[in-house]
Length: 71
Image (cartoon, rainbow, N blue to C red):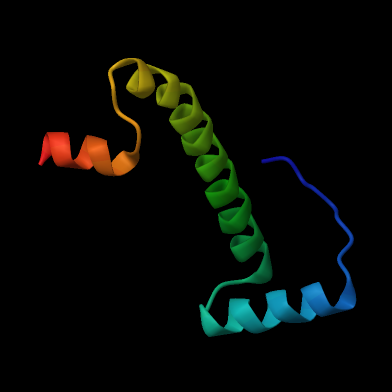
């Protein structure tokens, strides 16, 4: 595992500590989860943007059109 050192604003650090206690996680584990979740969402958003062109070519104008078609 690689070590990352970062600086946080005091308010962000306090929010992190509060949330980690609420979730019964260490601050380190919570930051790891936040980063992993963010990177996953970015990948999904990239795929969604790429697929949008294919959907439009197939005649779909919105996600609702796609949902109606597959339902």
